[in-house]
Structures are given as C-alpha cells and as structure tokens.
Image 1: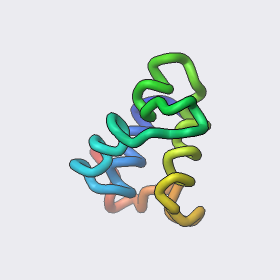
Image 2 (image 1 turned 30 degrees about the vertical axis):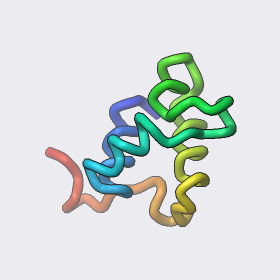
Image 3 (image 1 turned 60 degrees about the vertical axis):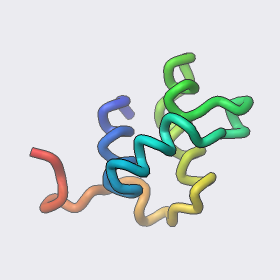
Image 4 (image 1 turned 120 degrees about the horizontal axis):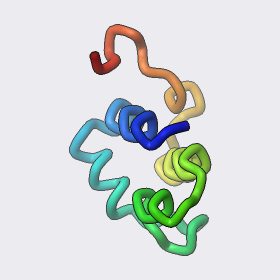
Length: 74
C-alpha cells in the first residue's frame, strides 16, 4: 500500500476533514503514541498503520479496502 492510497482511503472512509485530523492527531497506541502520519514518517508499513487506524476507529472490515468506482478520484 502506498501513502497516496492510504490518504485516499482515509478521506473516503472518514471524510476529508476528519481524515486529516485523525491522520495527524489521533494517538495510535500500537505505535507508541504516534499519530498515523508520524508512524508512516518513521518508517512503519503503511498498510499496518491503516489497519491500526481502522481498528482504533472501529471501521468495519468491509469498508476498509475498497472505494466504489463512482466515488474514486479521477
């Protein structure tokens, strides 16, 4: 998973404004209290960070991995 995919998925799942807030400010205990952006910047695998963020926000499995074609960015 690339960071751009992470950003696109998080924007889709949480909405652009909340996604940015969650990526920058939500503390992920799995990464020692780092935010998602900080964890990625420090070299953590993006897919692992995405999973941790989804787990922290109780995102159902069926909403985590796919953006419907008509809702994808062009």
